[in-house]
Image 1 (cartoon, rainbow, N blue to C red):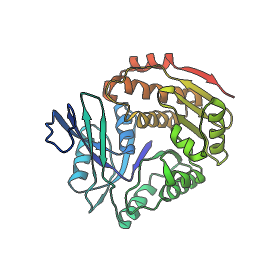
Image 2: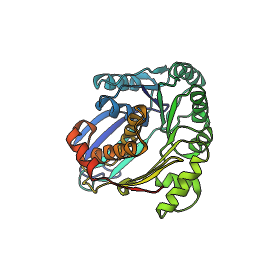
Image 3: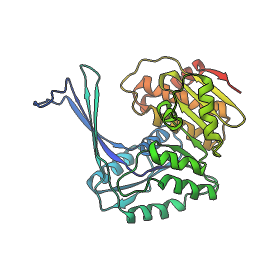
Amino acid sequence: MILTVTLNPAVDKIIILDKLKLGKLNRVKDAKALAGGKGINVSEVLSALGVDNTALAIVGGDNGNLINNYLEKRGVKTDFQWSNINTRQNLKIKENNSNRETEINETGRVTKKDIKAFKKNLDKYLTADNTIVLSGSLPEGVNKDIYAELIEKAVTQDAKVILDSSGEEFKQAINKAPYLVKPNLAEIENLLSTNIESDADLKKGAEYLLKKGIKIVMISLGAEGAFIASKDEAYRLYTPEVEVAQTTVGAGDTMVAGLAAEIDKNSSLKETAVYASALATVFVKSGSIENVTKEQLNEIRNTIKVKKIY
């Protein structure tokens, strides 16, 4: 089974208007509230695909209840650690006239007691049969080495860990050899302090991570596709150009969901990369994972070009 971990979930309130006028009254065209946080997003995608998974997170207050109810209605299984602190809320403003998006995100906060209880709950899932997805930012009150600590615990129980993070927590976590990491182009460039300009550069970036004991490296390249590598094989994937239906936000989490689904059923490296890339692409094209059909997914899969690097 697949478990997703979200240490800093959020209620994502989306406001849609024609044009944002700073310092003036703005009339809202539409508004909605969604459950947010990268791990929770992954669970939503997996559940929509019919893949067995459970979302683990720390939530609290009215916002925590909103997240719980939202996911329950969508058939997402959860096992939440409840906190006395109200879960954060993020505001996303979308402008119809320009398609510009403005995000205002709260930091989020938990206590040491919350983290201790969360770790204890996670322990029961750390088995060789499970794939654990660690993704997203960290709230206040959590040490930067938390992902490294969780990976170390999971590895000792032979659980497979997929890591999708950035910054200092990512740098510390990769030293504990998660099963798979999925940096994007900016993150791999930041990690290596160099510009990535060719397949050879991508290969060097992947090799840097593989030497740390990581089994699979998937570098997402946005509209340019992806690069995936293990110690035995590597592929450069070129995805078709598609029109963005709504937004590209969420494509990365959709890709992670695809990776987790294929890894959990022991698919080949090439098939894992093709499926994850196709899923992210069709998500961007359709605008929502609920709009994705098997026919659309197969159509995109058949148009992805794959070049073997080694």
